Length: 484
View 1 (cartoon, rainbow, N blue to C red):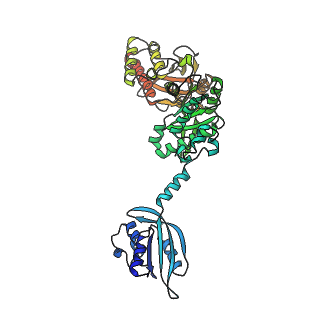
View 2 (view 1 turned 45 degrees about the vertical axis):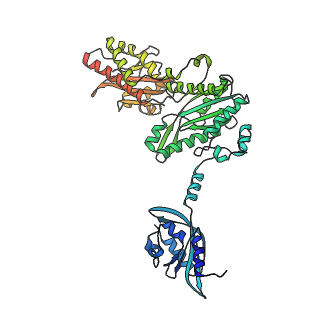
View 3 (view 1 turned 135 degrees about the vertical axis):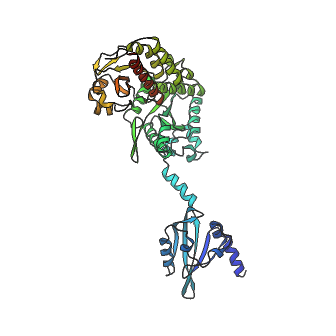
């Protein structure tokens, strides 16, 4: 076969890499078809006689110019990474360039490059992804040992969090039941995750999920495995803790000092406070089938949410046997406000009104008591469960109409007298609303729950705020005896 110009052109045009050649002034002399297709040109005429700078392909043309000047001096470059603009999009490329000789003289250069944008993106995704289980760790379980002979590891693990993906964590639970292996099944729902996503963006949400999943996987080593059910819901299969005291200790430590929940996760200039609500049940102690078992953990999860979130619920037959999700669901905010109004209208006197609405609030807000602080700065239990105590520095805390938090940290600094009382009562979560009209303050309503770092929801804050304004209006309009 004799090499002709036509045959050479055909060979060059069938190459998948983009090929080009230039003269000593770095001006294009020719390109192949792959080059034209890459940039979307119909003909090489648009670039013949022009340089890269003339075409405007590089945001920073200096490195490309320097490489080509060295090539024109006799050097060669091999797979040098770079970036170029293609139809308004910056693409990653790797380029190789060599000098062209005419006799003993360099008359130009020839180069080729490949688009590696998709490869780089996949690599970046892999670099950013976390992997929480190795093959050796999972092969200790017969289900995963068999599975990994058929399924790739990157499919078994969730692509974001690095813990077990939904399909395989659920199948693992079913396999354990088929093998009659006892285990505790738990579900965790991150509290106020939607707020984090909406306020700080999906990147922040992903960061939180990865952080919690990483520490959860580390914590469950030796117990079992963690998986992602979907969204902000995570699953735990605990093969070690089957009896109630062991399960309680497992969750106490998980919510305590193991850096999983009830913690701040730093992100840029923010500290994201993250908590979670959990529910669990055990096979075969509590359920005999997968569907029954999952139904129980779902019920206990919603039971925890109804108690104010940021807590765990371990299924106990005597306590939770008749629990139904539809009974857990709270009534609408309007319905609750309407009922509060009716109860207040039925009786006279400030304390009588509080006595009338407490049962509604206990049911709707899942609180054990309601407190109020009068003008003299003393705190009273509506149900009489606590003695009257001085909390007169509460005013220093209440710069706004409403204060709600799951810890007493801010109160400790701003209102030490109030903090001392609440701390002695074992209070962790508190919500306070001012009772007042314009600048006149009649007192404060206080929801303060012992041993419960609950996250107060917006509808709950709204209900207590409504009641405070309702009572303030009654005090102001009807000239009732104001709370002392």
